[in-house]
Amino acid sequence: MSIFTALVKRNVTLFFKDKGTFFTSLITPFILLVLYATFLGDIYRDTFVMNLPQGISLPDTLLDGLVGGQLMSSILSVSCVTVAFGANFLMVQDKVRGSSKDLRISPVPSSTLSLAYYAATLLSTLLICLVAVGACLVYVYVVGWYLPAVDVGWLLLDVVLLTFFGTALSSLVNRFLSTQGQISAVGSIVSSCYGFICGAYMPIASFGEGLQTAVSFLPGTYGTALLRTHSLRGPMAEMQRLGVPDTVIQELKDALDCRIYFNGQAVEIPAMYLILGGAVAVLVAVFLLISLTQKKAQK
Image 1 (cartoon, rainbow, N blue to C red):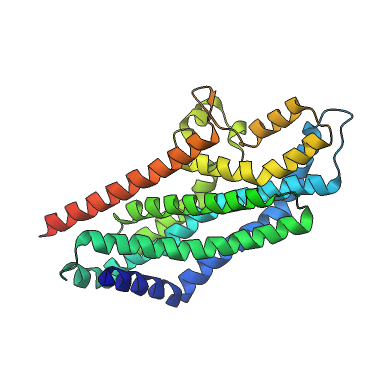
Image 2 (spheres, one colour; image 1 turned 30 degrees about the horizontal axis):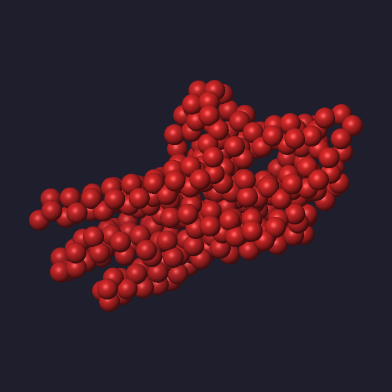
């Protein structure tokens, strides 16, 4: 265990010493928050207003609370994965620098080396994402706070679980990278594409039927749905208290991906947690299996 702890400490220290990678990962959620609030806030707000039945109006603070919840869930669902990829590039950089060769010829088991990379990436990503949660909560508090304490707790759980998923996914993908060019290519692809396929940039309900079916097989979709649910449950409860018909609220939940459908059936929240947790377990198992296989092949 002391060797594992030393390796994790070494990996975390190297990540934070690399000022370029660290600050890029740290400011990414804040840049997204500014961009979302500046360019998408009014669009989301107008969408809410247009979808309300005639004769129903909501207070400005409640509309801003709905917008803030949607923005917060979008930012966190993307950051938990993209930041994990950035933090996990250390594993590839060790290959580029030749450090991984020194580690492989040591008597340390390959599984320990792999788990140390995973744990270090998880810790680094969690730290950055929890800072992002704090910034998002401050933003929501300023524009319109309707979040009960219990939903804040669920949000933190969602972020932790999605960070486990992002770390597992990045560990598996980065295992096959070995050059700086590949790092840049994968980083660009993930940062530009993941937000779309997980429903963060555009609600999945607005996709075509075929694309909706395809993304329903992706675990990250359910991570976004969990964040959406817990970010918007408070504002929607306030809408219900103000007399907004339940049918309108249910339609809004579908439109904003608070509910995800698989094969025509709504996926319940416990099932979403099981899907996301199961995906983490499978990805980590495959990552360790590949690590062991590669080391045996090298021997």
